[in-house]
Image 1 (cartoon, rainbow, N blue to C red):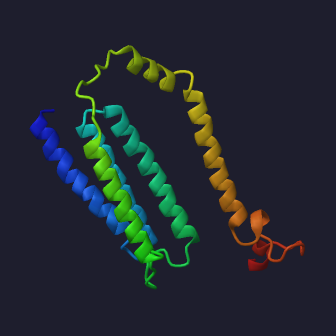
Image 2 (cartoon, one colour):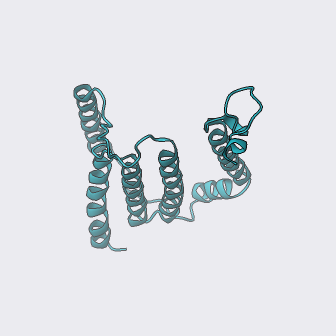
Image 3 (tube, rainbow, N blue to C red):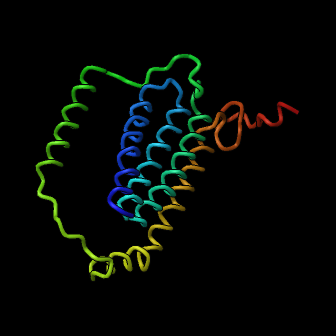
Length: 184
């Protein structure tokens, strides 16, 4: 992609990503906040793609889309008002939070401008780049897959244990009756 094409994709996507990220904290709906966060992180994946980092871009889009959709499902299941009809406020201690966010943002902007970034681009055939690729996609792949399945089992177990009545669906602890028996 040419420099002009990169700039035409990068800057609008970066601005839209920041706007959607801010709206995550301005909406009264947890479901909308999750979907806005999904959009913002999807745009971050687009930024990686625009900067010719295809692996990170696709990885970011795939990981964040799965993660955010699962988060929205959990919010809809467990929140008393996931649609935001009761006027929820997602910000706490607004003055100090805004001051801290502004200070960190300004500090990171100064750091980004003051850093002496390398001018040379490493070629994809460089030995270090290939070694990292072989490591991630080779012997470490099993560790990533095992961690993902473990997290999935932990989420399913958390849902089963957190629902009313526990995993057996008992009406009262120790009474031996199931709530399913009471409905029939």
